[in-house]
Length: 129
Image 1 (cartoon, rainbow, N blue to C red):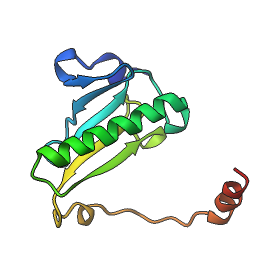
Image 2: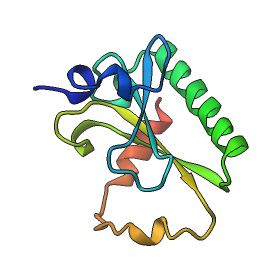
Image 3: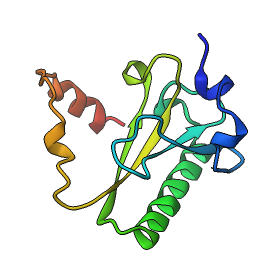
Image 4: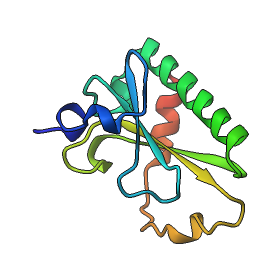
C-alpha cells in the first residue's frame, strides 16, 4: 500500500523534525494550528512503536503542547492518536495536537455510535499484564 506519510510529504511541508518524527500541519484542520506528529518509520499502530520511540514521542508531544500553551491564546491542547483501521487510507500511525479554547464546541461536534464491548475480558487481561 502506498503511504502518503512515507512517500508524499515534501520537505517544505515539514516544519520541524527529530531523528524519528516529523511535524506537519493537518491538511483538514479542526482548528487553526492543528498539527500532526508523524513517525518517519512506517508503523500502523501505537503498539508497534519500540519503547525508545514511544518515549521520544511522549516527550515531543509534551514539548509541543507546552509551546502551544505558552505562545498561543488557547486554553489547552487535545491530543489524539490514530492507528490501525481508524486511519485515513494511505497513512500510518500519527498523533494529532489540536489547540483548543474552552467552550469551543469541540466535543459537541463529535457523535459516535456506541457499541457494547466485553470489558470484563479486557479487565481480566489487564490484571495479568
